[in-house]
Image (tube, rainbow, N blue to C red):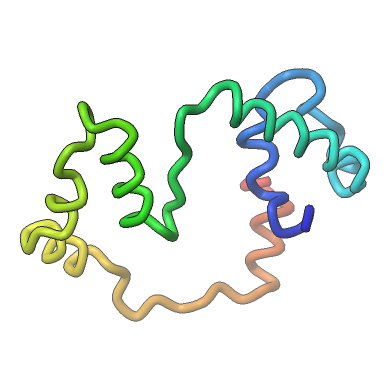
Length: 112
């Protein structure tokens, strides 16, 4: 389970000293477990709601219910012809998958 959520742990854990672990320790499940607990606590204490991009429409629906002052009608706007036309025009055309060798080089290099 920890491997699948690893890329989100640091984001929700934050910048505190317990979340700034040496790179080698970040692969250790004990350290990850501690960071996961901190991240879960922060999510419960510091965030009212968290959306999921892969479930954007569902997230908008939740936002409309929980934060109507700010999101009333957001799903309707998102589903409108104008927005959908813009989305379709900005999708990547002919998107290719990045080879593993290049992706690993980027992950271990400047984008680390």
